[in-house]
Image (tube, rainbow, N blue to C red; front, side):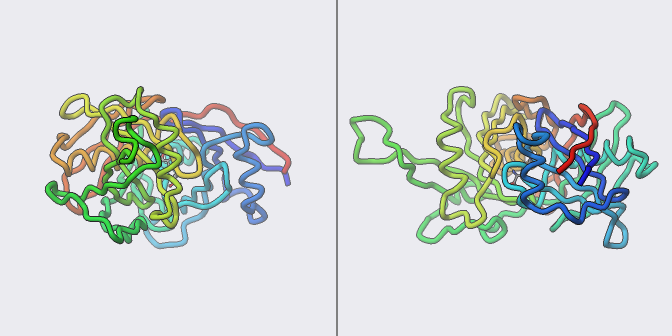
Length: 295
Ligand SMILES: N[C@H](CCC[C@H](N)C(=O)O)C(=O)O
């Protein structure tokens, strides 16, 4: 099967984008998607984005996301949503700058800005453990702040003096359509992101695993963030992770209602008015190259 694809990136989070409107991609299964995502045997990408005709009234397209390492479908991808908007506009699939798309569990509004960036209405955050899902059984959250903070023992010990007591992590748990655990750290560059990220990503309390964000507050309105993504490892940026980190900081009273998030791959701007209002994310979306692949 010969497939036309477009390689794109949003703040260094990279994607293979497929036109399922003008191509018949019904034969694509998880194995072929995983091959597309493979950085040695395929094109290589953190996620595969599929553009399909809308199935619901009021939407322009259906937007489906698959993690590149597994070919498994996931609920949301924020950096991907910006690239989706750039793609359908540049490919002539739509001639408007405001685009409405449906994901598996959300309707998003994508807006192409005159400066080349894209703003995405990411929907409202959801805080119930069942929204992730996260199993809180036996845990007592710290409810002194506006949102519950959960504490888990890690497999590591802090130092010989406390060899009997494991180190702990405290995190906010929320859904942006996909599951996120956000840990506040003093210095993202020195924190053991790979170890703690891999451990929490696959913790049995997260039945569908979880994206793990490591957030450093630089100032009210400015954060640095690293994210160990579910089924992707650490990516250079994570859009839903940036929303989750910003919203957790705001809900905890540590952040203003608009935050500039510095990721390793670029900067994202997040705005949120609280409660059930939508989270707005603005950032870059760029095409890298186009090509064909025989699968
Ligand atoms: N790894 C994520 C999907 C991609 C999210 C990320 N690339 C973004 O920009 O939001 C998950 O399994 O939920």
